[in-house]
Each structure stands twice: as C-alpha cells, then as structure tokens.
Image 1 (cartoon, rainbow, N blue to C red):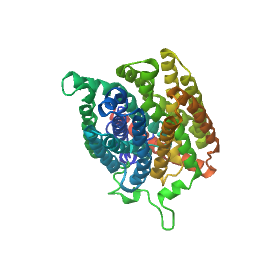
Image 2: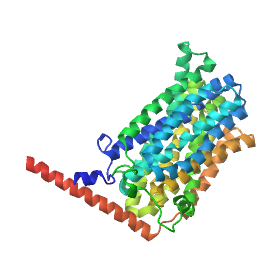
Image 3: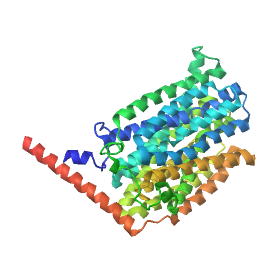
Image 4: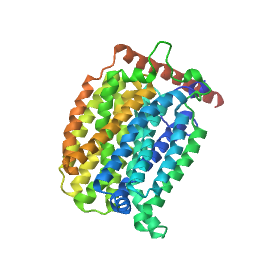
Length: 457
C-alpha cells in the first residue's frame, strides 16, 4: 500500500521529507530554478558600475542586452515545454543546467558589444527553467496542494533574482579585493561561481529525481503525454485554447513585470536616490525576498478557494491579486523618499508574486495531456511582457519612474481579462474526482499504518 502511494501524486507537502520522490523533486526543482534565475540575472546588479564601464556600453546597449536576455526566453520556454512532454522534465532540466553553466561562464570572455550581446542571448535560454519546475511539480502533486506546490517551488526559485542583486556585487568586490582582477573586470571571474554550482545541481537532479512518481518516461512510455491518432499535436491543442492566451496575458502582467523590475530596480535606486551599487542591490533583495512566502501565499489561497469554489474560484483569486498588483505599482511609482519607495516596493512585490502563484494554480487544469505546452506558452507570456516593457522604456524616452506609473495602469487593466476565463462543469468534476481518489488512497495508507503501529504496541 505504501508503495502504491509512493507512485501516486502527493496529497500533502512535508518540507522535511527527503526520501519520497515527490519531495526530492520538490526541493531539487526549486534549487535548480533558484540557480538558473541567479545566473540569468547575474549581470543586472553589476551593469551600471562594472560591466558597462568595462565594455564601454551605452545606456541603450544595456537596455538592449536586457531585452535580448529576456526576449530569447520566450522561444526557449515554448520549446522547453514541448521538450518536457517528449523526453521528460528530468533530462530537460539536466541539459538546461549544463548549457546554462557554460553560457554564464562563457559570458566572462566577452570583449566587445557584439560578443557580449551573444552571451546574454545564450544566458537568456536558462530562463526556461521555470517551465520545467512547474511541469515537474505539477506531475508530482495532487489538486489539493498543486497550487501551493507550484507556487512555492517557483517562489523560492525566483528568490534567486533578489539574492543575485545582493551577492554578485559582493562576489565581484571580493574578487577585486583579493587582487584577482581589476575592479572593472572583477565581474568576469564572478560569473564562474554560479556556473560551477549549476553543474553540481545538474548531477544531483540526474541522480535523485524521476520524470513522474512511477519513474522515468524512457522506462514507462505510457506515462508520457501523447496524442491519439487523428488528434492535434500537444502544442497545437494548447495553442487553440483561448484560456491559455488569457493566462499568457495575465502572466505578462505579473511575472513580466517582476522580470522588468528585477532587471531595472538596482539602476532605479542608483539613479533616483544616488545609492551605491552595493546598497541598491541590497534593497532590491527585499523585492526578491518576498518570494519566500508571497508566491506560496497566492497558491495556497487559490487552493483553498479551489476546494470550496472549484476551478473558477481559483480564477477569481487570480483576477483580484493582479488588479491589486497594478494599483500597488502605481503607488510605488509615486514615492519620492527612499523609505516610502522601499516600503511600497515590498507591498507591490507581495501582490505580483501572489499573482504568479495564483496563475500556476490554474495552469495544470487547462489541459492535463498538454501540460508542458500550456506551461510553456503561459510562461513565455511573462517574458513577452518584460520585453514589451523594456521596449517601451527604450523607445518612449520615459524615465523609469514614468514607466512604472504607466505600467501600473496596464497591469490593472490586464487583471480584468481573467473574468473571461471559464471552466466547464465536466472539467470541474474531473478535478474533484481526481482529488477524491487520491485522498481515499491516502486514508487507506494512514489506516494501515495506524493498524501496524497499534499491533506493534
């Protein structure tokens, strides 16, 4: 009976459990995403004071580098979702981590604007790691906890964006302090730190995870998502569902904005409040630190509403928090004192990450068979949003403060699109049936364990 439960989706999350495949996958997926996010944004806090002077980059070039790094992830996320469906999340993550390690380390050899741009394009591919993390936890956890499972692994992984803003300047300063490189070239050696750790995690992911609770797709071909004869391909099936594109736009409004703020917040504080690179990076850490609980909170609330109000209840929570995010961004954009700016930024961060958690509490129920494709398309929406925000900043001539103000209105309006997202009675019933089946299995196992314990006593 225990073996039967171990090969099914988990109905609860035990953070101290490192024995079951579901919880090993939970922990390794957020750690892998954390490192990918760390490497993806490792250049951002070093750009203004270190990288740009070293390579003589203009302000327009630094913005283009950001657009390139975020923009290429759009295509990477679309591809990686389908790759998960074909070869499984385990192999997909290992391949991506190894590629990312070489991309991040390789960026240290850039010596012209052209080679630097190419390196940032390569680094941007690892932003697709988010899709694998969400895919892997979705196949490991039951409907009653899928929201908080997806939200927590993504939230703790996103924390890498805040940590890199605080630690990369310190690593670069340490490189210069020990005389390993000149101050303006210290970033080159600093890039090898996240690259080395990514290779280590790739090894751990290969050894300690499987594609699904029952094992790997290579050994269990029937567990791999696949279409029947005459059906559309998995990607086309996902792309033909208008609900996927509504979530695409809503994710552009939340994760797209988080990407933009993560990449620009350090520069914003340095320019508006005349802070040092290290001080600005430390403040931005607060923005990323909200991932410790904010995204999980969004997923947890969505799970609770889903239990009482069904799948459409999950959608309502998503709408509310996206609208609140837009209003919070408007508030942040109008703060002219440092203390109020930091406070309102944390307030905004709470809602933006709750919105992300709520989004991926809905995604697994759109199309179970095409989960990878749906996750990839919706995830790509975040990057499309970030690129559009950066393009507006580049082409409009607006200051960051003016851009944040305009984007607040955009996000709030996007939030209302969620009212167009509906689930059929059949889809609602299928989610309830799956949950009941897994809960009944859990009760059987608990009863058997209690009987065994009583007999031993």
